[in-house]
Image (cartoon, rainbow, N blue to C red; front, side, top):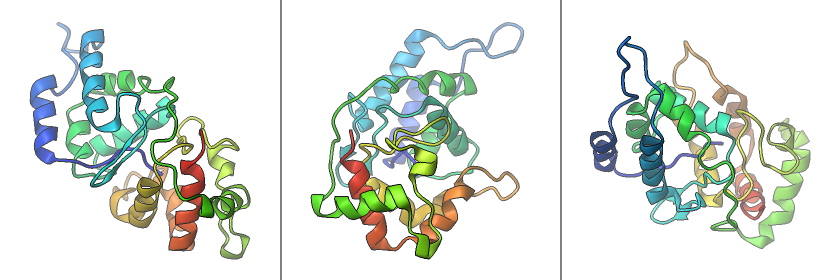
Length: 217
């Protein structure tokens, strides 16, 4: 599941104008290391949507949690957006203005944040969701989510943390998966792992597992 949300394209354009489109070039033509000030400015921009503690925000649309997210996954997602292997009306524009060096620098900014879940899902769905997460759905050939995302749902490497993520965001991502991810057939990526699972889970099952995950700390 992904962790970057949607917003205004005009805001994305403002971001690019204000903060530039990449790392400063050194005299030899190679990218120079990004400055702490530049990283701080871009991190502050991220927080305007994702929250000061990266906890996410449930408004007109769900803006995902970044707090505690695996740095490798954030770098992977931003790169996929930059390379148009994933699309998002807002984040595609933002990622397109980031240099590889800045992507790597930003990927670590939310790792140590640990706010409580911003929008826990219905408790009535938690037990069913926990069962799906831990056992999968054998009758539909859906493996346990924990096999990739970990028993605590905190992810590892390019497999994202799901604990505390907004239920609404996770359901939307699962419902729209093939329309927004893995879009470069010549350059397949990790989106292919989740694609068959998104088709095999029912909408009710997606809501249940997302409700369970949204309550985890």
